Length: 153
Length: 281
Length: 129
Image (cartoon, rainbow over the protein chains, first blue to last red):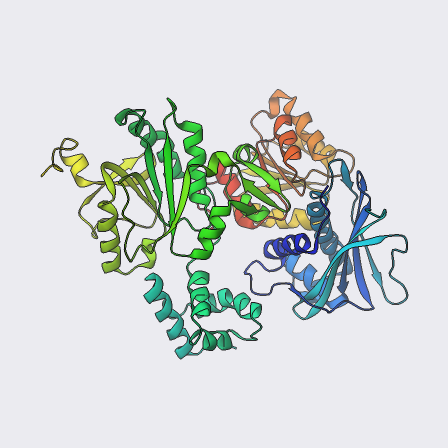
């Protein structure tokens, strides 16, 4: 089986950005050490079946709003909390679907789940990180993490 | 942040010298959008800084030429020339050539390879009597040729005008990408050619695809490119240009012919005199 | 005006596709899954020229929808185009075997949709470039 790598995540992310968030190719997602803190918006999909794990996107609040605005073609001020949920849910769905295509046949993708976290914990205590891509888009932090529920050893 | 007139003049002069491409004033935004990723890659903050360094560093200048002479390509976006190729040109050539004569096709600005591999697909699907073919794919950009040679395409690229039955027949998944099969790659060779410079010394071609390249050249360069390409065509060969391009008023040595719903161009001798009769002198 | 049916459980994706297909000159109908789409088809006259179909949806998925539509003669003239993140070679082959005509992998650019519809003869080529 193929284990998704940070290079895979980067390729997938670049394509998602060119398709939906940065069609002109002028505001790319730029990998960096930066990582979203609290409060944040979390969007996840789970993979079950032949492989078990999660694909998780974390956005700063502003990044989630910018994403919804770009994806839905709305002004930033018009964007509602539902718009944000739909937009980041779709982003994680597309990225998760592309990650799934690298996993063994017979893996299934769940429906996306979106939540906002103001403070406290944001953890998958029993999961192992497979790869993580973090960086910024229009100077706002976004991270994408692939976690597996079973160690792949 | 915006490019100064002097910086834009440097960039447009560079691509004009290196690739004979004319960048009119007003295209500053295009230059900035294409160069920003390059600037970021080497850690310069602005496109202006990048251009300043490129004036001293040859490799950066080459990158500018590459970035401004390439576009994301579709496989079969303009269907007409490809339909004409399979419905008109191939039947014509299969009739005129003996089964032992290899068909020679030139994809003269192959970019990342969609055109030569697309042509290979059509030849694989349509050639009869085990007729052989070879495709020469050339481009001005070394970076593009390297990519084309690999035959690896992103998901975004295989989405672009490639019929899905062709995708599943001629490509395999390779990680996040798709790999062109050996069946497509074995008859395609690659070579770096600047159409405005010296053309390769090779046997003549049956079909030349020169699409959406002439538009970048000035009139004199267009004329010279068309004339020299004609000298590399079989007398009964076919030339396909982009939809917005023509030989008319530029090079009288071609005659425009209708091929299906597309226009094609053929060396004039082929249509005004019996084949071979005028070329013997 | 030609019509298109967009079938996707994501409102964001329906909106993106609606915007693209509208620009290409189609009137757009939407359904949130395969079952909703079959119900909607009963009420639509004339039938849409093309359906753009997500794969993973609740209640009835895209593959089941394609199979259901292909089993009925009256839908014979409707073009079926999958638009999905399912991108394994085998999955694409499955969708074609079930009767899908074309396939777009998510993520896609507007040009990808326009060019596939042009390949299918549903819009003139070069409509969006």
